[in-house]
Image (cartoon, rainbow, N blue to C red; front, side, top):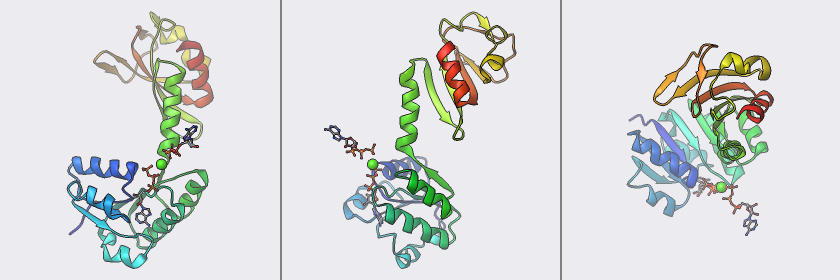
Length: 218
Ligand code: ATP
Ligand code: ATP
Ligand code: CA
């Protein structure tokens, strides 16, 4: 039988992925080296097994090769995370997502061919930092090392002005890609679009430009 997902490492992060996938009705094979963690997921995941995933034989016996997407959420034991990822890659797993513990770990994971490397503590920290800078910065999504999308709430500085009057593209090099007004969302705002207080603007641009925009207008 072909299962869809396997989650290796049932700490807070892997556990949360496992719960969410299961809630969404996905087939999940949950794996951890500790019996206690595994028993916690017996009634949540489709299958929960105790295994040390750094052992290639063990991975093969688990039938991991039939799984399309494997999530490696082993945290502190970076060596186990790297070894597991390498073996999954050698076994020809279609998609491998790995949680990185630090930047060096991330570099190694990319080198050995992880398809997706996530860094939840660092990324969540960044997002929260932006929302702490201003109550009007609602969210921040990194597109690359130096480009982002931000969601900002229009305050008094933007209220009653049009995009042309604010001259956002010329002054700050950022693009307003959408404006949410209560329940309506306008995904191709015109230059003459009037902004009201509490409208939500979705803005895309280089980080340095977004910072200037945030400083002056948010
Ligand atoms: P989180 O922050 O998500 O809670 P963490 O960063 O604290 O996790 P750990 O607790 O170190 O990460 O690891 C997550 C899980 O991975 C643990 O439950 C641990 O038992 C499991 N794990 C560690 N090594 C292996 C291994 N070789 N095989 C399978 N599972 C493992
Ligand atoms: P993260 O998952 O964000 O890496 P964590 O959940 O593993 O963090 P800890 O490593 O326990 O959390 O704590 C994070 C940091 O807080 C550590 O660098 C630690 O030195 C520091 N820290 C822990 N307790 C205290 C304390 N009482 N006073 C000051 N610093 C502390
Ligand atoms: Ca942690």
